[in-house]
Every structure is written in structure tokens, then in C-alpha cells.
Image 1 (cartoon, rainbow, N blue to C red):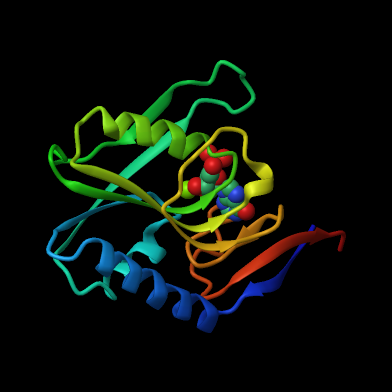
Image 2 (image 1 turned 30 degrees about the vertical axis):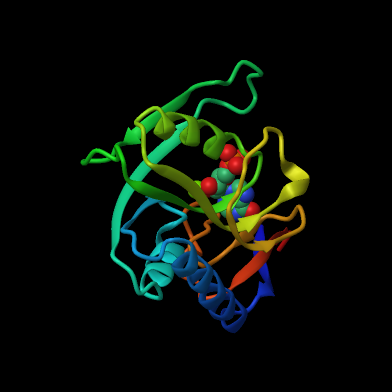
Amino acid sequence: MKEKIVPLITNSAINKRLDEIAEEIMRDYKGKTIDMICVLKGGVIFMVDLARRINLPVKISFMSVSSYGSETKSSGNIKILLDLDESIEGKDVIIIEDIIDSGRTLNLLGEFLLNRNPNSLKICALLDKPLRREVKVNVDYTGFTIPDEFVVGYGLDYDQRYRNLNYIGVISFEDE
Ligand code: IMP
Ligand code: MG
């Protein structure tokens, strides 16, 4: 199979949108310290580029999670592959994620982190595919709303590849 990538969101569109989101976050968190939690691995590139635009104290940390099989209806469990190394109690936390698809990951992660009593907890996602939503998620900051297509680039992978593209594209497969 030959992989073909058709550009969907250019690097300059991403940069412009990140400037806007950073402005919005700076307004909302004026005078505060932000604890950013990046969901590995897809959120990494988005988080570092966003954090560099924010002129407030920002701390960064990482989590890696997998939600138990979306194929099982009883899925209400999240598996923490990498946990935080500091308490978030009383902190102002923003979860940084690459994309919200079914919504399962963020729904479960949000609940998990709320149990640790942060002062506030918001969600910031680069991409949102609302047509795929299975469970409700309140997203506070969204980069782009996209159609139900599989996308790669700017942190998002297909089979762990393409995360390093500086734009976002739709991947498709053709017989050679
Ligand atoms: P959710 O729990 O279904 O919302 O899963 C979201 C996760 O699925 C994301 O963090 C991505 O890792 C992955 N994902 C969903 N859609 C795409 C896509 O179009 N490209 C790459 N990864 C995706
Ligand atoms: Mg992800």
C-alpha cells in the first residue's frame, strides 16, 4: 500500500491559530501559574509550540494513558502508563491533547485528574473531530474542528510516523 498525504491545515494556519489560543489563555490565566499536562505522544509538538507563546509562568509535565478498548461497551477504565511526578492539588491545570476523537481518553483522564483536586482543570486540544464523539467532553480551547478523516502531522501519527510534519494532512492508502 502506498501512503498519500493531502495537506489539510498549513503550518502558517497552525501558527496563526496558536497565537490566538495563547492570547486567550493569557487573558484567562492572568496572574496565575499554569500547569500544562501533555498527553504523550501526540500532544508534544503542540504543547511546546503553545507554551513558548505564553508569557506567564508555565510548568510542563507529561502523562501517557491508554483507555481500555473502545470496542468494549463497559470501558470506564483508564490505564496510566506514565503518571505525574508532582501533586496537582490546588493547581491550575490545562490538559494538552492532540485530537479528540471518540472523547474516551479525555473523558476518563479528566475524571482521573479531578480526583486529585486541582484548583481548576481545562482541556486544550489542537484538533476536534466532533462527528466521531461517543462520550461528552468539555473542550475549553480547540485549535481546529476537522471532518471525520484520519490525519497525521504536527504530533499526530500513523503507525508512529509523520509526527514531525510541520502541517496536518489527511492520509490515504492506495494499491501500488
Ligand atoms: P479518543 O479517546 O477516541 O478521543 O482518542 C483520541 C486519540 O486517538 C488521540 O489522542 C490520538 O492518539 C488518536 N487519534 C484519533 N484520531 C486520530 C487521527 O486522525 N490521527 C492520528 N491519531 C488519531
Ligand atoms: Mg494522543
